[in-house]
Image (cartoon, rainbow, N blue to C red; front, side, top):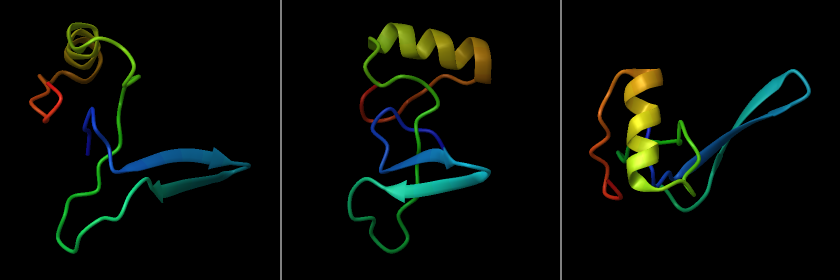
Length: 62
């Protein structure tokens, strides 16, 4: 799922998709990646998420 403060990152290595934790993730905690550039302003991130992914982000950074 998405968060503007993700606990994991998704990247490609050849034809493999790799999910890597960015910090310790507690048992039962949702694994979240970001769908946009976290360096963008809050208003820009929210605009992109609404336009491209059709949802309004309410994560801890938004």
